Image 1: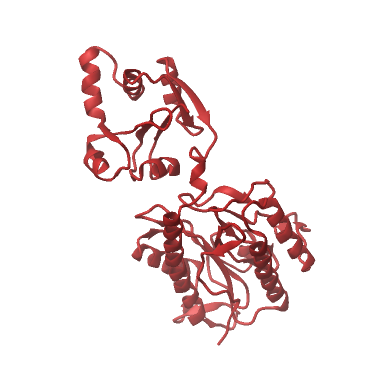
Image 2 (image 1 turned 90 degrees about the vertical axis):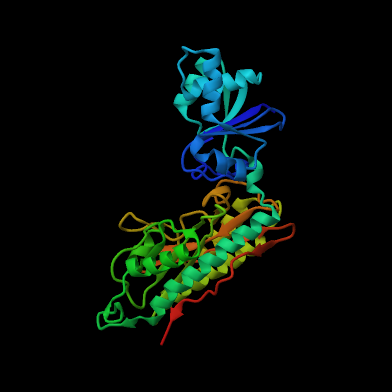
Length: 379
């Protein structure tokens, strides 16, 4: 195994945070010597004391100290990041390194010009990151519990709303909007130490676009998709959960769609276990939705209708990480934590999606999500 090098900000690089357990908003350098040897972190004087206290590495270095060492050898030399990195590496007899595929191109070019050989590695840089330890599973469960409480804050607003003569929702005499519900959900997340990220509250026809965040007054007797996916500030782990509710009486078509999606989740749950290809799970989910009378394909207006996204994705230090449950055939393995989120989308009905998170185990899966599933919110 070659030495490994990462240069990034750990708040945006899951691979770097995984290696160091040190959050920082600005880029810093991480080096692991070859064959799983000593680990090094290089940061500024601003972060040095916190890094020494928090980072899970063998050695923490101050850039300014390295700069002084360089100047002792080369008092008239140009000092930039690439020069300092190459200086340290050559002192340690390291010239061959593996770097993430996302390694900065400019820095890579400069290092190569200084005689350092870099080989990009497909992400995830640490493949073992996909297999969660019991401690990581516990952190994801904590994130999901926070997500559920925030979800319930949003559902409670919808439940307390009234239906006006135009079949729209009102709360305390004013229109109930996607923005108001999203604000309540996000506020609860912040109160519990989580950072919201594009929380979806999408009502009626808006919900036919799976990633539409939602805007404006919410309709009655129509589906409202709530998709909440926060990152915990202290740990970096994500929660992810979706529910679809309807304030007032749902149409027969909407009820059938909701039941079909819920049953499709059960189909996936029954198939997920160690060693199963994700494509088998996805194909079974898609077949169940089709067999339930909900066809997937282009509609008369050219838009997509039915179930046209993957069944799930890995969850952990990234909101979307390996493995995927979809058309790309990836094998599910014990220790994977994945979402299961079938959905149906038609502009004349709206969208229906239900999402839970499960842990893949030897003979099945364990649902980590504790949150009720229901459609109608009636008086």
